[in-house]
Length: 238
Ligand code: ATP
Image 1 (cartoon, helix red, strand yellow):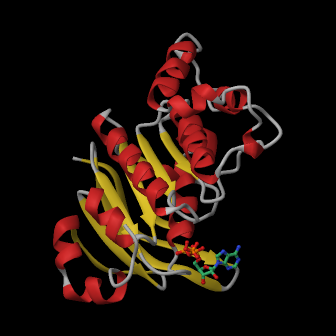
Image 2: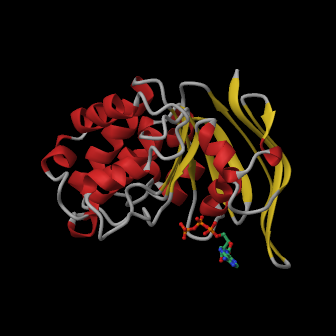
């Protein structure tokens, strides 16, 4: 059963349409990746699903129409986005950034345990818990952004280019983290330009180009598809 089912989603920036009727399914417990070049509409898609951009079409999350839910209500139900620019509070500590992630929780009783779990998952954040977020390395900042999102107790985590701007060794670490999220029961919708690494860890994939889904299928099948290989898997670092 799909956790998220999107049918014919359109998004405009003024008169310009950026998504021309995108449909996709995200099954519970899966990693689903959306790959595609710059300007394909990947960030636009996630922003519309998070509710920060208006859209037309149908998007059902846990069987409920997203259009009836505010941004905050989506977060409360576990639909959470980690934005490409991470949007951390640079002059606050790592620990305070993590705690901010829990503000939307109705029940506060779990917060302490969740924080411990996040430090267990990201020992580097534990070591640096008193450090200002703005002084972390790029990879550590990405871990903090994911950790902060985990503090909301997400069911479906939408990651916008988590590997962007990171060194290959850190990229591998980030993708291992993404796989560990699935193992701990979090469903992931992953947007990436690093198609090879994204497909390698995904169950299913979609290729988005200029606002349209051009191809979709099981991730391994896409990774072996000559059209995908020549367009996206040429010289990518994994
Ligand atoms: P990237 O990997 O570069 O972030 P993307 O696939 O995420 O690319 P989007 O950022 O979603 O692509 O952009 C899709 C299209 O919408 C592009 O043509 C872009 O120029 C346009 N666009 C994005 N944001 C805005 C905006 N705020 N106003 C007008 N047009 C926008």
